[in-house]
Amino acid sequence: MKRYVVCGLSNRGLASFVLPLLDHGDTVAGVVDPDRARVESFNDSVLPEGHERLPWYAPDDFDRMVDELAPDTVIVASPDHTHAGYIVAALARDLDVISEKPMVTTAADAVRVLNAERDSKGSVLVTHNMRYIPRHRQIKRLIQDGRLGRITHVALDYHVDVRHGGSYFQRWNRVRALSGGLSVHKGCHHLDLVSWWIDAAPEQVFAYGALNYYGPGSPHRPRDAAGVPYTGADLYERDPYYRAQAGSGAFAFAEPGGVRTGLYGLAYEHQYPTDTYLYDDEIDIEDTYSALVRYDSGASLAYSLDFSSPWEGYRVLISGTHGQIESRHGRTPDGTPLPGSDTFTFSPLFGEPETIEVIVREGGHEGADPLQRSDLFGEPAPESLRDNLLADARQGALAVATGEAIWRSAVEARPIDIAELLAQS
Ligand SMILES: NC(=O)c1ccc[n+]([C@@H]2O[C@H](COP(=O)([O-])OP(=O)(O)OC[C@H]3O[C@@H](n4cnc5c(N)ncnc54)[C@H](O)[C@@H]3O)[C@@H](O)[C@H]2O)c1
Image 1 (cartoon, helix red, strand yellow):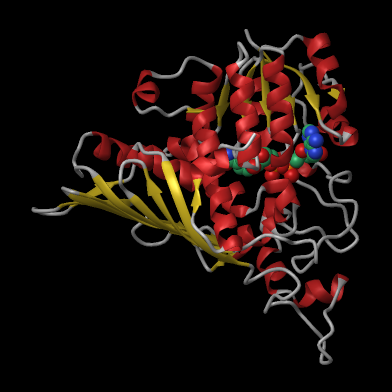
Image 2 (image 1 turned 30 degrees about the vertical axis):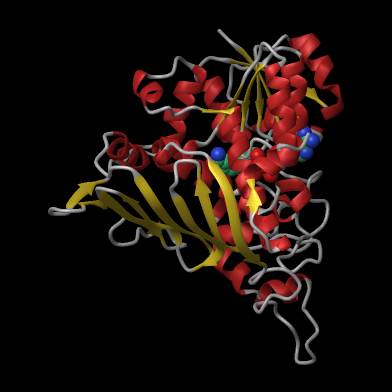
């Protein structure tokens, strides 16, 4: 039986790792998190009966924790900017690492990880769980079986709805130094998915990006008749994003002056000691991107991503020399699926289009998370190995570098080569 330690008792760390591992009878030997009170609240009120309390360690005590607990694998589920430090420290101790996406927040940190892995007996897997969504595997199979011929072009138009999108701008994700910006934090999912679908590595990116919906200049920021922005309860009363979020569960805002909580009602008093608003000056990232990516296979991607949409999901068109796949998958903010989400279309270049029913599984991220956990914590299934489902450090690095290339291209108004970013050390 393997021994795991978890860095970051985050929502994700709890729901995807700690609780499923305990449920499965695995050992979670300890937790690293600066928020001791959060870990103790977990032990007091969430830890299932019959389990030992999880010992708490501060971030600076990572090495002491490894000495005392002798884990086999380090799970990294803390805010994105902290991943690189834990991954490199774990590899230096020859431990295996399972890192949440994005593997790191910058291409320079990705290079640090790749170098550390080269010198270690340990290795890194990155939880690019979009690969595991059953309908994405159906698409991968059609491509792998050659039904589309050689892939020439992908158009992916991804929308994050007003509730989910707004949540990023109230949390740590809204600061580039903490998340890499949303082209890294969120875009890495989509950029990895496309690379995996078409089995190609990104080479060059050109992009535009802007902060259109959130931040101090938001067109939705409530102001009084003199143009002065409201704050506190007066703001929330008038804030369309807050009203859209109210009662929506995990993404709900804290009431002004209230304590922000996450899953299982666990507080984030350490992480959010004061109120945060969607219009704060510290927001320094984009909420809208349009990008072109060229791949080493000769294929290209037209990608757009926005964080304030009336619906959540995507339209994707994958074109090859012999056929095309078209899929539209999404839901409204209240969870109603959009028409057409339960099928996608395969159209041979010459011949009749085929409507394909989407396979649906139970569990987080449309059934992706339980399948991924079973590969990560047990032996990978033969189908997972055939479909190359587990993302390694190099693939994690490419997704991060492409996300960074997107925001850099937007800021610097020039094409960015992925090799240029990954040449940094
Ligand atoms: N694969 C997915 O679909 C998916 C979904 C959600 C989140 N994630 C990823 O999971 C990770 C956690 O995100 P979240 O939104 O659940 O986080 P969160 O905001 O819920 O929690 C962050 C936790 O990390 C702790 N923390 C802060 N600084 C730390 C440090 N230096 N060392 C250790 N812990 C620290 C905080 O105290 C808090 O407990 C992120 O990397 C995120 O990108 C992945």
